[in-house]
Amino acid sequence: MSESARKGGAALAAGLSIARGAHAAGSDVVRIALIGCGGRGTGAAINALSTKANVKLVAM
Image (cartoon, rainbow, N blue to C red; front, top):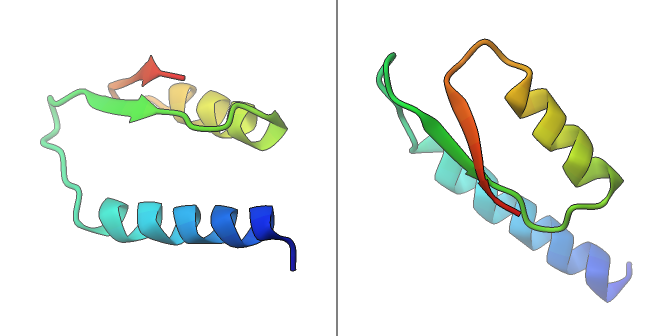
């Protein structure tokens, strides 16, 4: 396994553990920051922004 794959997996695991504890009220804006804007990151941003939820991309 490459070093970049290990780092990516660790970052994903950290993000998932944080997301599990994150909650937003129905009227809250969910702010998203994107790290690593390659093809997968761009696709994830598009998916997040195309929801009907109140989502805002604040950093790339």
